[in-house]
Length: 105
Image (cartoon, rainbow, N blue to C red):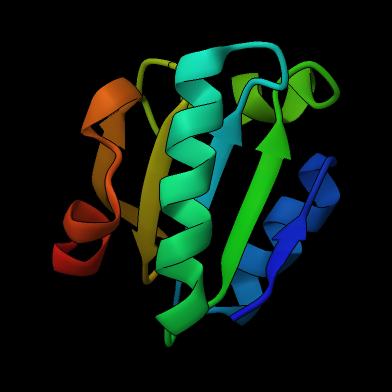
């Protein structure tokens, strides 16, 4: 499935309302650890059956902070969040973001 980049709270809220399940990667464009996590996420998305989204933390700081606040989860980057029925049901960060762990989520 193609990864869609989002950048605004409005886009995120629309995704939350229209998708019962999806993944979101918070990705830092300048961090090598985030770059490695992004590669794993891209591999995962190739066979994913649910939508996959990415936000670039440097360009979407308001959205990253909004998600952390609304869902009472500490912001990390890289960080992948698995949403189901409007709630975060699984999350992982840094080197723990692997294609295999994403498939198991």
